[in-house]
Length: 70
Image 1 (cartoon, rainbow, N blue to C red):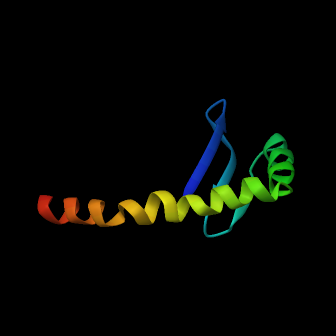
Image 2: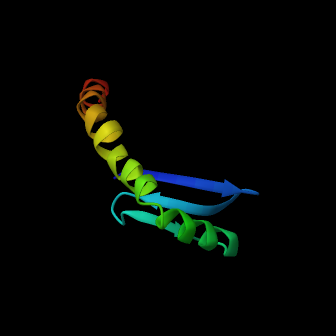
């Protein structure tokens, strides 16, 4: 799962989660930002692609490192 969180004043404001597939707001301003960002199809497609680009590309490396250290 790919998660990208945005914080303001040490509080989580907005989060993108690959399992949900969109931005979710946790504060009043975060909800407004999430609604705005969810309307932008190109921004959503970039964030959805991050799971394949970042996570799945590196998972085997992380898995191998964890096995060698235990």
